[in-house]
Length: 315
Image 1 (cartoon, rainbow, N blue to C red):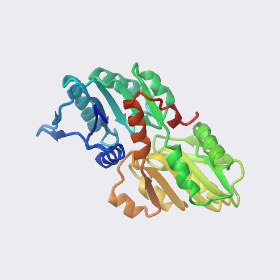
Image 2 (image 1 turned 30 degrees about the vertical axis):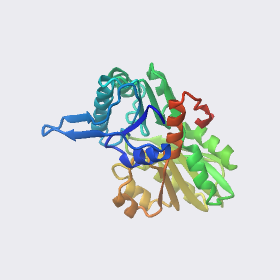
Image 3 (image 1 turned 90 degrees about the horizontal axis):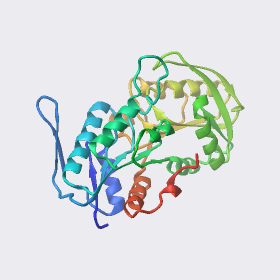
Image 4 (image 1 turned 180 degrees about the vertical axis):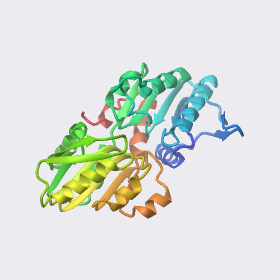
């Protein structure tokens, strides 16, 4: 497509390559390296003057390094006279720091939104923001896609009826209800209390899971505490099979150990964050689904100034 250029940072080049392949164009030349003192060096190898540039960069761990790499590359594109710069951020790091829930803490999601705009981004394309209100932190257009079509297509192929969608916490009820409507399942909710950033104590389940195939859907699996506790609870209440799906498999800290030990029959995440061969080996029940076609189609429509609303989930 004339004028379209897709570039990749270092955080998730395999996904960027699959997106470029879907679009039928090669990845643009971009040399990124680190100076001996740890500073990031960026040089764009291709001419981007007047181009519609899309930079694919997940801000997954190490989040700070990937955020700086994204900001520096956007700045380089702006200074190289790109006509429009779209930051394609499959996983938007710092999204969970979206409000002041206690005194003397920052709103870091707003901070990085300001930094990205100041660097020169004209648009943001992302997937399943942890909090939808983060779109309002930007004064530039934000397209927040949903991985629901990819995840739902996968679960439909497993023939899991009778199916019950279980929300692992109250805050995820809306997401679970939408999946329940699309997949034709019932809905149950877990009453959860968090005792710290990494420790979760689940108490009660609202709804019936006895003899049912259970599906839990979340946007992020980080340390795995919420999901592991929720799976233990529904297992005790007589669930037949337990499936877990999430858009972003951060899988940090004790997540792999917790998921491996939990009574889970199947786990599916998308490739917004690269999953290492070591994690795949230790979690043989893990399936990784690609969102390349979803994101590629959104890029195509943005480039052609066409509507992308049909790609959104009806929240």
